[in-house]
Amino acid sequence: MAVGELLNSTGRRHLEIRSPFDGSPVGSLPVATEREVADALVAARRAFPGWARTPAAERGAALHAAATALRERADDLAEVNRAETGKPADDARGGVLAGASTLDQYAELGPLRGGRTLLGDRGATDFAVPEPRGVVVVLSPWNDPVAVACGLLGAALVTGNTAVHKPSERCPRTGQLLHEVLAPHVPDDVLRHLVGDAPVGEALCASGDVDLVAHVGSTAAGRAVAARAAATGAKVLLENGGNDALIVDAGVDPLWAAEQAALGAFANAGQICTSVERIYVHRAVAEDVTRALVELAGRWSQPLVDRRHREHVHSHVADAVDHGARVLTGGAVPDGPGSHYPATVLAGCTPTMLVLREETFGPVAPIRVVPDFAAGLAEACADEYGLAATVLTDSTAHAQEAWRALPVGTVKINAVFGGAPGGAAQPRRASGSGYGYGPELLDEMTTTKVVHWEPPCP
Image 1: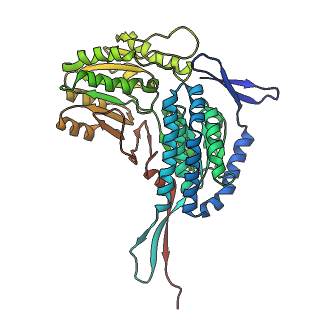
Image 2: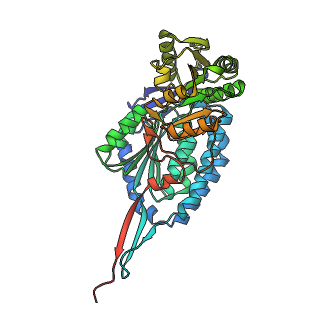
Image 3: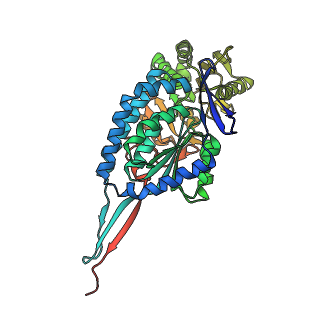
């Protein structure tokens, strides 16, 4: 997709969306004005008291109904998502179904949450209760737009908050259709939707009418969100960039390790929050793993979200080559329309290269050969991000050492993706802060009130 700006005859800004496959026009949507941003927040604030007083079971039932409607429109949403971002249709549909499951999960968990009693004087009653925060702004990403938005919106709504949702400008039609599916299942203005780019997001974050901002996206954008929200005192939840390491130990099967590396680096063209961004391979298996990874790379092909992002990905590859890395496959911008970029394997990578220092977020597998497991672990830990990491090893001792040492929110042993439902991790350092999913997200969406109650004087 290519995002541009158009002005209609009234001078109103529009987002123009172009296909990542061939550059053809996909659609155009008007950008929310300052007045529309303000009106959405005012409406959400007005709707808040009534929604907060709605019984928790009724809020849960509304989410269940929304989940059912979402499943019924899964194919439609998946097709719009594919057209805007290039996400494979099966993956896009899987994201919709994951979003529906998340709504169902919060529909069940929300009404079960309660407060707790406190032990005070015998003649008094003391208790602590969770209360909704108020108006929640959700700024969701383009790489998994339905699943991520449903998680944040579901947790916000089931706990009694109202929400204003601005999807990424790279998938505005997906966000618009999602709103059309969800909104009928809650009262008017409990869920509002805005089309917009960075200025619209900035206006939302800077508003004093917002109680919490939940943002999933780049580290740079997340820091800008936090800076604006700091001026108003709004709580901020951030899941931002990652530079996830994959450590390949000696003793593992090289083909299996290469398959894991390819899946982690090339799935969805490397545009997954927890994609493998840097690979540390023990020298004992490095040659075999590298050879197999090069062979597997040719099986992966899909466009990047747009040409602007392709320029970013290729700049990291070019920087690596300029500093001595070798391109074993891929690494060249193809001719023709669209925003395709080949699955790329780089050898001879060093810690000073951008592909090892920063988030590339593309189908690039940079290989760093290390003399032993300890060296790979040390380099994997020496990073400013803290989202996730994977370790492939047949050594229980190495696995134990790694999960304890890696300064990230999620550690995966012998699988680049996967995990039990309900797992909730906190990103660290440049990757953000706060729970962004799981049961603990319900706690983030609420605040606690303590009550001390004594009988009146006789």
